Image 1 (spheres, rainbow, N blue to C red):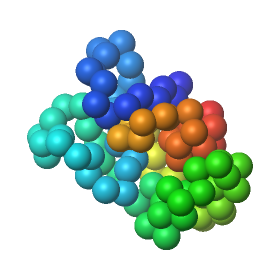
Image 2: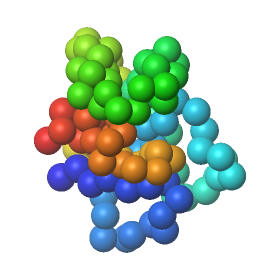
Image 3: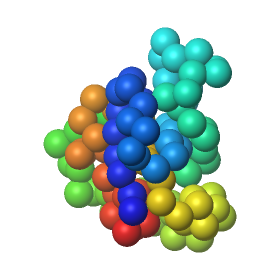
Amino acid sequence: MIDTARVYDPVDPAQPPRVTVDRLWPRGIPKDDPRVGTWMPHVAPSNELRKWYHAHLDQYDDFAARYREELADSEELAKLRAMGAVTLTTSAKDVAVSHVAVLAALLE
């Protein structure tokens, strides 16, 4: 089971363990905050792709395709998949049109 949430949301004990999949540490969150869970920055989009998407928010489908290409042979994706049920978290304001939605679909 793959859940998704914003890293700023309170921890729900009914959800699987949290894995934050942002390249950059979430603003305003202390390093020992339990809302982060495990931090896996290298499964997030590359800095280049992240910046491209922020400049082209209306091109989610293109972003998703590029991100899937980046993940094609990713060891980090394999590690994440091996974890089983997780809650993917991000600092993105809209999880549904973020890299987390793409990642969750790949893990399902």
